[in-house]
Length: 140
Picture (cartoon, rainbow, N blue to C red):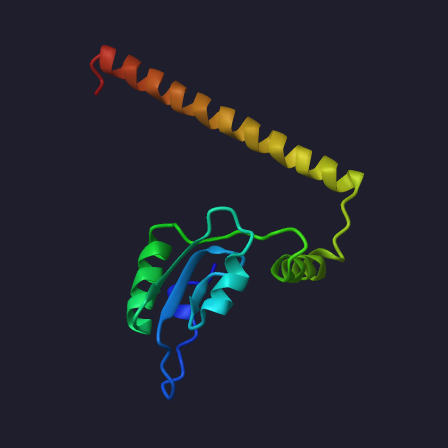
C-alpha cells in the first residue's frame, strides 16, 4: 500500500476534470480517469473509491484514509496485478530452500524462547517473594 507521500503528482499542464482516489482495489492511489479506476476495482468485492474536483482534495482524502488504516489492496486471482505480485514474490524467494534441518533449527529457537520466557517469569516471582520476606522482617 503506497504511503501518501509516495503517490506521483499530476502533470500541471492538463489538469483532470476529476481526480479519483481508490482505497480498496487491486491497485490503490489517485487516478485521473474513471477507466483507470474501473480497471482497478472491477470484480473486487466492496471496492472503495470516490472522486474529488482537485488533486489536492483527493490527496487529502487518500491520506486521511491511509492513516486511518482503511487503504487495502485486494487482488483477484489471475488478474494482471495478482500476476505481477506473484512474479515479485517468486523472484524474491525463488532461491529459498526449506529443509528438515531448517525446521529443527526453528523448533529449537521456539523452544528456547519459550523456556526463556518461563525463566524470566520465575525470576520476577522469586524477586517479588524475596522483597516480601525483607519487608515482613522490617529490612525495607
